[in-house]
Amino acid sequence: MNIIPPADSASEPRPTKRVLPSTLVVIFIILAFALGYLSAQPVKKEIKGNSQVTGTHLPAPAYLTKDIDFQLFWQVWDYVHRNAFGRPLTDTKLFYGALAGMVAGLEDPYSIFMNPELAQEFNNELEGTFDGIGAEIGIRNNKLVIVAPLASTPADRAGLKAGDRIVAIDGIDTSGMAVDYAVSLIRGQRGTPVKLIVLSNGDTEPKEITIVRDKITIQTVQSELKKTANGQTVAYIKVVHFSQDTDQKFRAAWQQLKARGAGAIILDLRNNPGGFLDQAIALASHWVEQDVVVKEKMPEQDYQDYISVGPGDLSDIPTVVLVNGGSASASEIVTGALQDWQLATIVGEKTFGKGSVQDLQEFSDGSAVKLTIAKWFTPKERSIDLTGLIPDIEVARTREDIEADRDPQLDRAMELLQESD
Image (tube, rainbow, N blue to C red; front, side, top):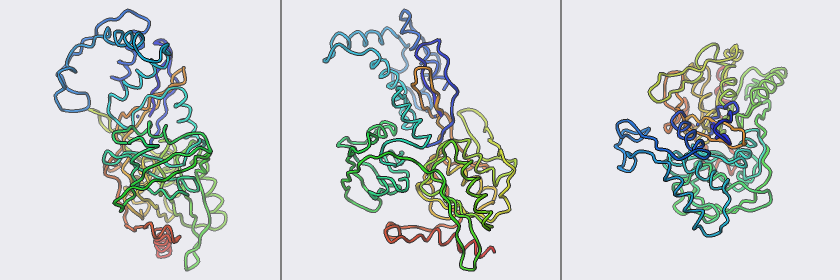
């Protein structure tokens, strides 16, 4: 889900990646024009059509129905260069700012242009190591919220919970703020503080939380052997994030616990904000054999089916999947597939509802664009985006439970596996 602009119109983009935490043709065409005009004479491009705003069914404002005249771009460029306070200006900074503004014009919180520095930070996060507080953030009801705090990180230790609303970051109001811009404000050098104003679920007044940033290394898979009350051995496997090696680590964890006698699985996807699509498909393929794992729907196109890539080696193993409001994106893909095909019992709370598809494309200068291009649906064509997925058995885990180190969701999972023995 990435797209990245080349340094010049002749550059070839590097291969794209589909990422989920948490996104082309129209935008890419516009970008190609913009880049071309940096080395050519200004010309006019006429917009044909029915004066509709792209992606909506509302009439376009009058100024959007006019022809595109790139002379205006150069007029603004020249005016800024001649009059802006703080001259001389850096052309590269203005150029990247123009590209960022173009993508921001989509008014989609999950679409963003990233300069080379931000793009590198984004890739570092996907690979599992970065400096920050250790929390995935997203948009819910047009508000910036915590999707999931990662375990044993500054965010987790500060008490941030899935669903907490971030009202301000270092005094900057987050109203209407794009997700990735918010991420850039929260991230920073380890050892430095960031001040958040947070409104927690159930609270009427926000509170101020100061968190000291640290190096975040995500241990994507955690596992241990558990026993039910009647002595059944269970493999408890928590998948924290869908990074590049998640399925490999999952397989290693399962083989190790299986060798120690595990005959059932608890797959814990709570507070897992997502990651790489191919890793979600690979994980689900341990249960789903040669069938649809997830469907992708682009505007005015039929569903594209993503088929499992594995033998379904765990399809006969009793499985419970744990989810909550911090389970998003790739986590919801795995959950939806196992639920639709009745290959696992889903326990916990309704998932986050991050079902939009971002495409990430990297270009030769190191910059990137992450662009929303489609929506995800379960194999039975249930929508994921905004609605989330409802567990088969709903069990709440309150803030009081967490503070008292109680886990009624895990307890219920163990009971179910004991009953199935």
